[in-house]
Length: 166
Image (cartoon, rainbow, N blue to C red; front, side, top):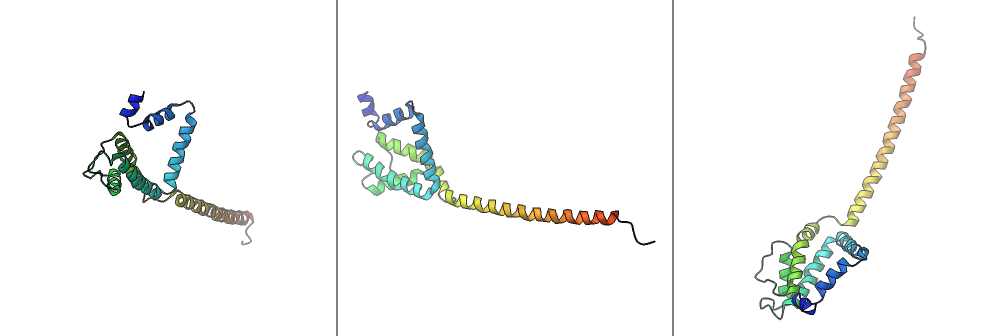
């Protein structure tokens, strides 16, 4: 087991795998839901965290084994380009570097695309405004309908009255 852990860059990947498989999968589901909610709350914050946090983590994982990752900015540049086209002369050489690259290249494009979309709060405000407009429009329509019904009743009464003309 120790040899397997060393080959895969430490206990972190194994621990995450075991965490995902343990009996109380509610914890894992809750964690995933919280991450999604956080990213939707403000995608730009999530994008910045992935680029800078992931870049620093990438640098720390690669600095001793990767000649192209000499500065923290190299890690940040790698992580930012991994979110979309992946253009750089730097490639991961460690298992942790590969795991970070996999994460960034898997979720990065969607996160980058969401960065310029409205935040969850902005969407909630827009939905509330639309609901208020719909309620107001429904009230106006009910008032118009009531007035039309009054007009129909007046016309029906007038039609039912005998004509006074010979």
